[in-house]
View (cartoon, rainbow, N blue to C red):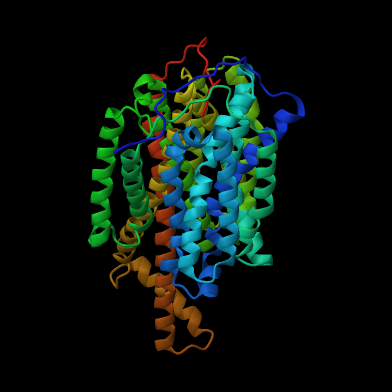
Length: 534
């Protein structure tokens, strides 16, 4: 049931277009990029601090993982509602309020004295942070003139890539030199400065839309469906998926709620999320699929790589962040030129093809690394990743809004950001499950060769026993230590091969999705009208 807020029809106050210029334009640009990066950094900054939080608050690792899960669930619920909430409260007010809510929740997270209080404040932080991505993007588009929006897209995409990469690096440094609380406290001065800049410089859109009714049913169904889905993806693997009754229960809730949500939003007069925009723009539908795949590949590979280099190659958290950082900087450097090239008529198909091929090669090459690989072995492979993300992110972000007008663009940015978040969640969940299965498969395969009838195994074990015997070990002790050494080798090699399989699986997924690029149709004369973005 919807509640009436205003009986008047949506009004449009058409005024003369006025785009920001000079220092004001760049202050707004920096403000919205910082706000978006705050949200993205906080998706990963806490990951490296979970062990410290667990020890400090006396919580199990399973309980402390809710610090990550609660934030992700709040994010994915609020992102598609950002256009509606911006219309309801006013986009400028909603943006400033979201920054302040995020900042206040960050303070409370750092002051939390038990795990469940921290989880609650992280959920509130996620509600504030989830609004920052689509709202920042909408403000940025309206700040720049139409001929400059390619550059705006490049700038925004730079933040999308830098945020998740900076998070672990910053988090590792703060935990090593200060304490886990500073992973939250660091947001406070930056958030307050961003809120002040937004209050001072950001304006309401030139065309305003009033909300006639609040679609409570749509909001409820979306929250139940997306929240349950995110919960399943975050917790399913650790709970053995459908072997756990409550995972099955939440799967049922997710399926029923999302089907009901789609039906309701397509049949209600004032939907909270206007899904019909997907029917009006085939390019948005294609962009959504590609964005999902990019989110899957970005977060899936970013999940496996640190685990691989830290557990097997001995990298520290700080070294891992330093190894990843140059590729993120490359994406940032090429983002604006690529955006400008697109604005001047460069083919988005061509750029995305280059990006998809480069990401395929990046994942495939990672899948060929050995246990002897070092930081220098990853430099050019990761630079290929940086190149790929720039060539994919910029065109697909612009493709999502090309040909749309007015409030449709706000809906498109919200949907696109939600799809990327879900792609990342699917990427992490599926990759984690796949790694677990492949570890078991490789282990069984290798153990099948460790028998008294396998000459290579007998020779290897015998060599280890002789080496230990030469140091004075008794024959029985030497045999036990040799078997333990072989067990360690089998386990290590099983994980190594499983991580390599995971990288190659992501590469294959990108290869399978490349034919989607053939369906993109962009009229060079058709530009996105962002004069009334929400």
